[in-house]
Image (cartoon, rainbow, N blue to C red; front, side, top):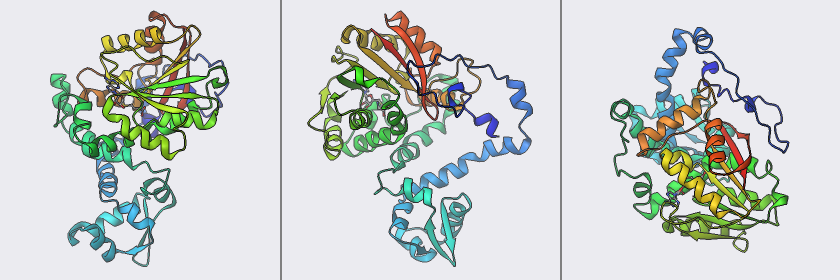
Length: 368
Ligand SMILES: C[S@@+](CC[C@H](N)C(=O)[O-])C[C@H]1O[C@@H](n2cnc3c(N)ncnc32)[C@H](O)[C@@H]1O
């Protein structure tokens, strides 16, 4: 089964691809039939059942079970009472999490495994529960109607036709959405801070920045960088809190605006992380044109997303993310590195190259 889930990007081969200039690598075609021959009936059933384990984890995050246990191990009855669970399913739920490797149990007392304690306790900096929370509340229900989306081409969001109207309908969901973006993007942003020649540039603006996870990571590593993040006006408070808490409010500021209606602000480097995939091809091209217009000569645009392998055969994470755009947006879709390179060249960018960042995330960089 792992063969099917391997994302297939040749830049994810475990070797160091960190050199700059960025390597331009064509993806090898992996043939479908070879992969299919490798999987068994049991593997197929595991695909079908994967959502059981997924939902057990998402409910545990919703209940904040791992934060509760981070304060100290608890016997099953105390844990059940603290979380407000009915006795019928509690023991099976806790023991299923043990079997999944998320909890440990000794003499009836439950505790977090090291990875769960590091990443699922909301009080720890490496917490990834923001993204899991969004998966639980928004993605999981929308994916339940994937078949309908495939038949109609329409998003299946229950709240609103517009992803951001829904997420920003109140301050709590805005903060949760922006926090989810940070936990989704930080691993890629950390690599981006080291895989681009930042020493050659002085200013950076992250377009569609949410909390500002990417500019904060880059500015921490490169003390000469100043700039900030551009996003819709309601995002300003969460950006400012995040940046201030990390001691960067003297170097990074918020630029309020709407990139569908206005030109983009200017800086030596513009970054768009998980932006293009939200939109249809026409808007993607408009955003690239606006970025080109806003950059000074010699300035750079960095696009990063869960880019699909060029053969569209192996990067399951990128392809599934594109289906996620189907169920959650009006016209969004993910794309290959080759697509992005083509659009950027047509928008006027030169020296267009791509490189792997982390997991399924890759970037394409172009110079004006
Ligand atoms: C998918 S999130 C990506 C956030 C961040 N770049 C990351 O990678 O974690 C898309 C971001 O684009 C912003 N956005 C959406 N529509 C926008 C618009 N019309 N103008 C400016 N920003 C917008 C959203 O507020 C959100 O922060």
